[in-house]
Image (cartoon, rainbow, N blue to C red; front, side, top):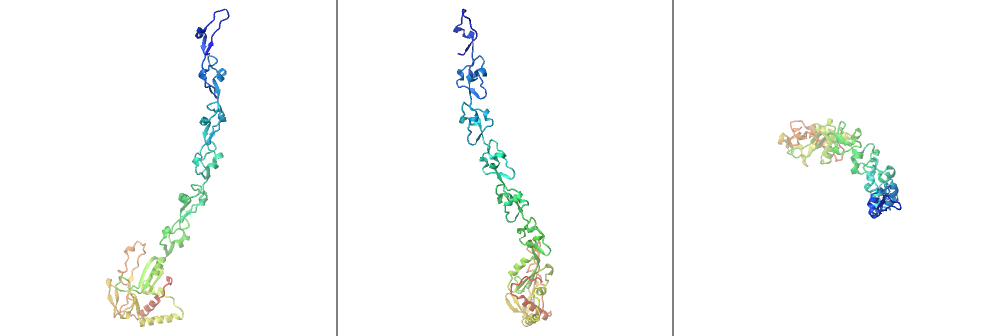
Amino acid sequence: GGFFAAAWAPDGEASCDGGDTDTCCDTLPRCTSFECPIGYRLRGDARQRFCAAPACSARDDALACCEELASCSTFQCARGFAMKSASEGIFCGGGECGGGDLAICCDPLAKCSSFECPSAYIHRAGAADVECAAQICTRDSDFSVCCEPRATCGSLACPERYLARKGADRLFCAGAACQPEADLGTCCEPAGNCSAYACPAGQMQKANASETFCPSRSCGEDDAAACCVRQGCCFSLALSSAPGLAGAPCCFTRSRGVRVTDCEARRAGAPMDTVVAFVGDERCPGSLEEAAVMVSPPPFPVFAWLSLGLFVCLAAACGFVFLGGGIKSIRDTKQEEAPGGAKTPRDGAAGVWCYRRIEDPAPPDSPGAATRSTMAGSPPLHAITPEQPASRREARASARTDSLRTPPGRGLADA
């Protein structure tokens, strides 16, 4: 085999023999030179097979040289893979499909991480490992598998000092559940605090204004009670001797521009023989006498004159005043110089109510606090000396003194 007779001789004429092969015949091509059509492959013994003519043709030699391939449509893809599209036109590597044909016939399934969820949704947990139904994720087939709704800010309770943003039900958290740490800036905004609120006239911000928050983004008129307290004059009447005054009794102090709460705290810490009161700055008393009148209880019918008479009698008879925790007669005192020029009681003097005024201290948060006068350096405001007629003053002062010795617990006076 492998040769094709080029000519032949009729009977009675000379004949050819084996030595004439090259002269008389052409060599047939082997099947290995034949290109099988789609869906076929050369047979395993194609090198030993020859075409039927000096030129191989699909019509004459396809079946002799080639064998049919199995279609991928007969192949079962493994888990996580899907048959390639138009699998009928894709063929396995042999007459039957096997495990080695997976890459020929199948493609891996797409992962949910390749699918873009709508803005109101988020990928489900582990989306990188969740498979879609085919090689490409689609909304129709894979939306519910790959995506879940994002939580709205309406489900998040903003912490203290924060308020829910407007339209919170239309704002979305980062995940399927809102988290205070991750979604605070998205869902909440800081509440306004009292530090930026301008209090009405006669009031001032509370001491902790920056830590007091309003139920809105900025504090308004409705927040005055939460942000502000009354501002005014806090004054006190004390009969005990003050440190640094060389024994002179400090009977009257005052401070303007203070909070009523600070004045209440001062009253709570005051000794038994001290009265602390609070009024508006414009009514701040300028002297001991004015202060005593303002804190004295209003007169009562019938008992008023009896009380006044009793006070006058006690003042004229005794003339006592509390000094440094003890009781001394002020009819037997004299004036002597104290440091700074102040007059202090001395035995034998007839003066009463010798006291020093304490200059108005600035509120603790006032810019001028460091430059105001201190207790020890203040000049004397008023003293009744032996040269001054004192009988009426003694009686009135004694009466007021007794009126100041009221049990603690009264509210701050606001005459």
